[in-house]
Figure 1 (cartoon, rainbow, N blue to C red):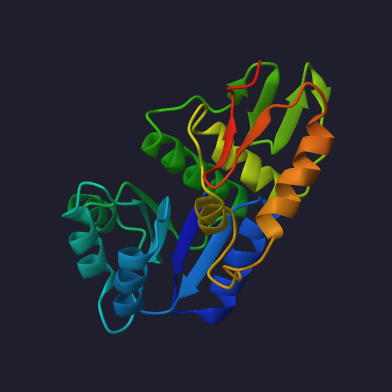
Figure 2 (cartoon, rainbow, N blue to C red):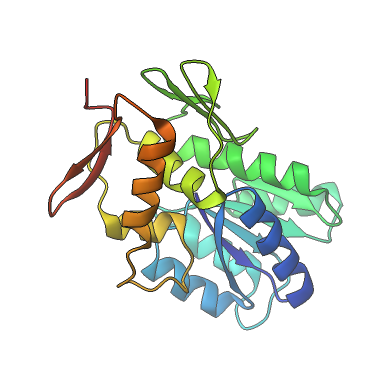
Length: 221
């Protein structure tokens, strides 16, 4: 999953970024509404974590503009306002969920995961391909009932593949969804991560490489 954090309080933004990284969630940070709209226009995000009171373009207007497009990221509006009317206003503007500050990180993570699932045709909380099972909420992977220990990046790459079983996912798309905006597009990180994933997941192999196209899971028997 890839998230855009729109928050002008730098300390909070960096704290959110650090916690998301612990949950194998890639995130980018912007501090104003204009940058948020520009980022969404150029990058495919699953969820936008949108602070309401931000400079240049107010969070309400950012939400309104994003909501006008059918193929858009889910929007979790984040604000210090706790009044019921404020929550109703945010949802009316097009937000998919609303979380008031201060908040607990476990709730934030749970809401982000829930919103991401809605974008993938209401996938169940746990993803399964054959004897391979991935639970995003618990950050657990098992194969044939045995736990597989993965790094955060390996987990993120596997989750992207398992959300689209049978679909070829390019290295570029994996880089976009599992890394952040600072990733080097010429890096071999994807290839290395896929290699270690294959080793840890064991035999028979479940990740297939299609030369010049990318990677696919769920087609190997």
